[in-house]
Length: 178
Image (tube, rainbow, N blue to C red; front, side, top):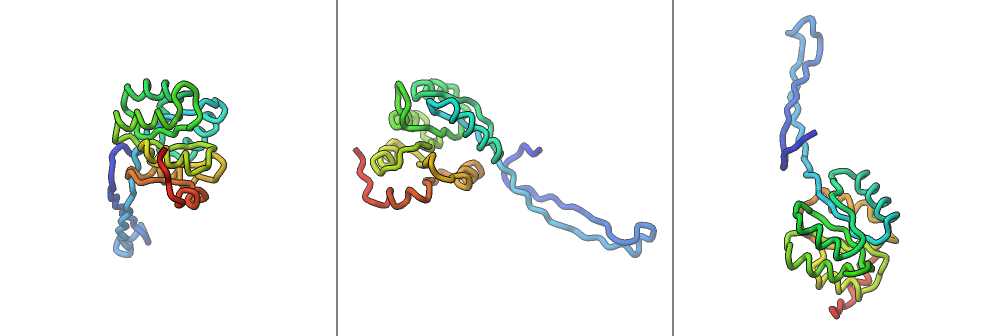
């Protein structure tokens, strides 16, 4: 519906009262501030096609997204990234050819502004540490309810770090980068 970025103000003039007698009408000026959200261009990297399809439906349900590609390994991800025009990558860690950690490291070096979120079933500090060191912008567990975090990631364009709340206690323990 809207194509621009940023906030826009729309003023609506409502005329209330007796339309037959304008002198008895009341003009009410409403200031509605509508925040416009840019559609985020997404790549999903996971070797499980069924998972990718389900995850794609979740993201499309939230809105503000365009799934530009789906890949099943890190090598395909790096090749697709060469085409540019991507805002966010959701990547699994365990993938064939090039795993998610190595793909994140290489992608972050080449495209430092790209937001990369690990979305994996691996819930331990070793993998969290590796993804943080590789340059990931988040670490989400497939076994947790991340709907609100997905919404936040898609609606915000900052480069903060996102983590499944249940993983915070794991990551608060001293992170060791191997």
